[in-house]
Amino acid sequence: MAHAHHHDHPNSQALLGKAFLLIAGFMLVEVAGGLLANSLTLLADAGHMFLDASALGFSWYAMRLSQRDVDERLSYGYHRWQVLAAFVNGLTLMGLVGWVLIEAYDRLLNPQLMLPLPALVVATIGLIVNMIAVRWLHHAEDNANVRSAMLHVLGDILGSAAAILAALTVWLTGWPYADPLLALVIAAILGRGAWQVLSQSAHILLEGVPDGIDLDAIAARLTADVPGINDVHHLHAWALTAEKPLVTLHAQADQNFDLEQVVGQMKTVLSNEFGITHSTIQVEHGECPDH
Image 1 (cartoon, rainbow, N blue to C red):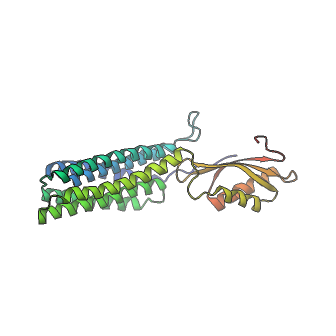
Image 2: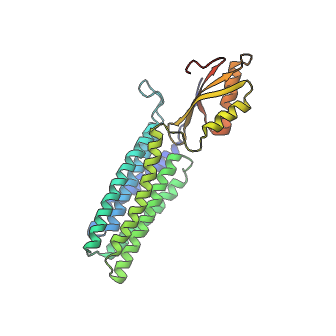
Image 3: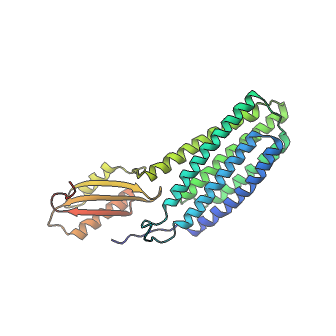
């Protein structure tokens, strides 16, 4: 059986690369601004931007890797690099969340002076930069990898907004607790994103059944819709990436049905009804040899 492998559109790669350079470049500015203004929310948001830049860079490089042909060492190709990159990024996010929580707790106990005007200027520019990046990525969000990267940047928009609010509060009221409290808001955003990235990528790496795939429904549909199929068993589903599900299964068929026709009909059902375009099917006329 020949299988078609669809490559990501080159425009998605270009937009990911542009967004990566923009976010990574401004991240350095935000680190300098956070240190100058002694703003924890700005430093936390700079950390978030660093991880966004990592996510964008990983996504861009993984997209390039996934276009490589299969070889003797990686017979499924390089698609899993995207998932591995997401898992590493999620672990790094969790580390950053821990640092922000510890630093915010210390500043709540021992309030520190913050320079609000430099922090306000840098955070405002950061908000504009993130909005530009989201606009770029929106034009290529047909790819799941790009959608994931865009969600990172959308989360950073909330971080920039929190940094702006902290700077405005300190500037207008002089209340020193605004900075660590709003840094905790950023930590909550980071923590939620980190958990989602980690759980989703770990599920794929552990060969879990992809979201939206119901094994019982697949077996029932194949048995009902394909003439000659009496039973479907040893049904397994997993994914190379979130948008590339795969299935293997055994099917018990009547002997008077054409093998090629039965397999073709089963693949049509899997593709049209469940979006599964890569499947391996073993058809048996008698008892399953693997029972």
